[in-house]
Image (cartoon, rainbow over all chains, first blue to last red; front, side):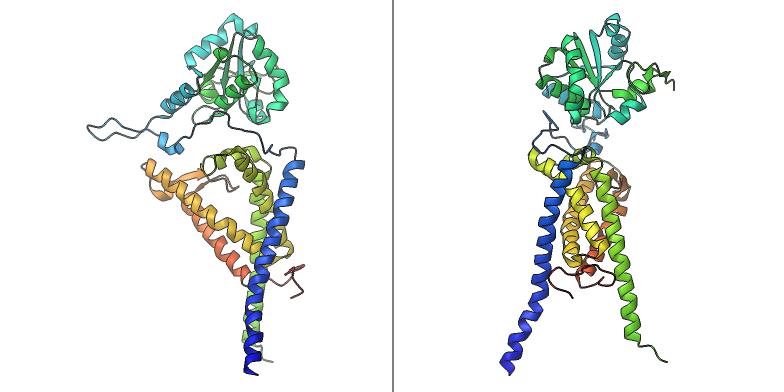
Length: 221
Length: 166
């Protein structure tokens, strides 16, 4: 009788644990299948095999970019954001353009002739909210959507300047590398690291909505 | 007519468990959908953690995880496979919390600001948050998930257990 009780008690204590683990496994497997299915049918879904960060270089956390006073007698203070970006661009073999150069290129007659082309590497939402007048939208995360328009323009141009928001934003670099990968000569490509934020806060013209839509404003601050 | 105190206590616990199940379910659906509707944004945030270097693996996590959270949230809300879903929540929450903590410590070490003043978008689906708030929130969700795992939240559940009717 005693043996029977011991025999029946053990499975009843173990069964819930096993049942929960099996149930968890079932949820995990079904969940993973449904999740990948949802990604596949979603219009915003990711392409699993694509490298969305071409030429990416591992960087420290954003706060590390903030300049800190170096202790007396030392020179190894953390790099500023601008220095980090410059080092990254150098490693990616991309040229850097300053705000002054950018403004000059914008006023250059070749800009109207599309021999100088500005490429906005941000997403559509940011682009519509404001961009450098005449810049082409090229969200490299959705490259297939924009390449048909951007690539011929870039191939015909003498110089291409890619920008994004500025600061820690790396999208301009990824967009430039993507353009290089699809055949745009590297010598033509430059990155404006100050980005749209710097452009807009320096009172330079801003275009709202679609490219050449005529909705211009000058952000003087 | 006397009411059984243990029965009242059980009723209160049952109601609390159902509310917990709904709260966790709704939270996971909300946070999951926020990420699922902007997978590129989530992918960028995920990359900052430097956990995986392979694009395929990184993309797979960014593509599947948000929908998986939504899936678990729906199961909890409906009361289907409650303990299995709660187990999945625990398996997601514990490592996420540790990873977020690790990143917050790295930011704290790199900048001269107090730990609780560290604020960043952890990719949790709620935008930029103060790290201390996030950690408290996650710990609370871990405790609630563990509580659900311990056979709670049977009331108003469509199918509490998949194994058999309990």
